[in-house]
Image 1 (cartoon, rainbow, N blue to C red):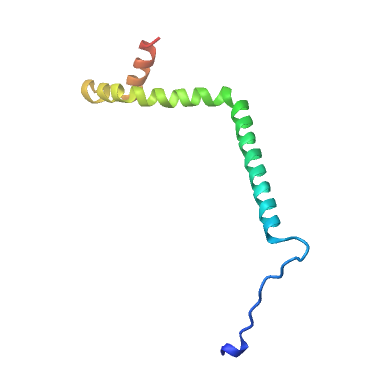
Image 2 (cartoon, one colour):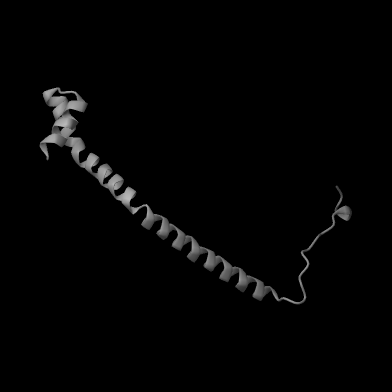
Length: 92
């Protein structure tokens, strides 16, 4: 294609609204959507609190008990399921 045939298309600007106003309104909309998204996440977490807390605690407990269970499995040579059950029943 030769340079003579290239046509530049420039975006048209609305004469009624200056470019600064459009950017400012876009920033306000973006901030409002961010606030709404944060509020939605907080509400979902508040509603699901009864389910999330036990799951998080069980994951932390599994990481805390892993070295003890691994020791029992390797040194005493007990099956993993038996070692876990023994440790859980012994802690009650």
